[in-house]
Length: 195
Image (cartoon, rainbow, N blue to C red):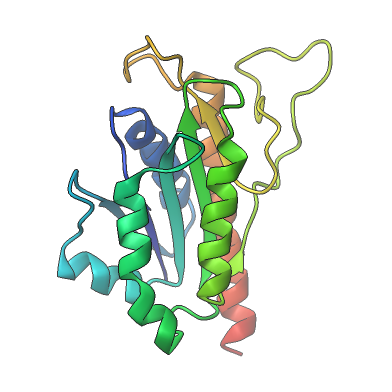
């Protein structure tokens, strides 16, 4: 069994909806033990959830994109992980990331790059989406990977759309496939790494 933690902050519920879609993809993969960890509005998680992160074989990071980067609540968790960085406690764990914002672009890539840098500082192994983009003239908004992301999962929720209608179906299906990919890669990595 591989243990996979999805840790995220959600300000308005859209990123939580995305996290749940990623989690459903993880759960669909045989022999996985998933944990969904929500960062609270003060930027904290419980000691039990810190232990889950420490025991996880993979950690998937999630945050909305605020002002071109992660939410401060997510940044607080990242800063708090510095003792684990010092000891390299998360070395060789699988890592991946996802984000959501109101604009199609909204500088979301800066958020993914932040998560990637965090993972690299922890000496983790980064996994991208592995999903080809919907970028032809026939592409429609609910196609898989409509936002054309490779390095991490990107989603978009219009600023006036409540979480019950955004992110859209295509982004949520992309999130599910992303969760599946991370889980499958984690299983393969653990098999090779522990042989």
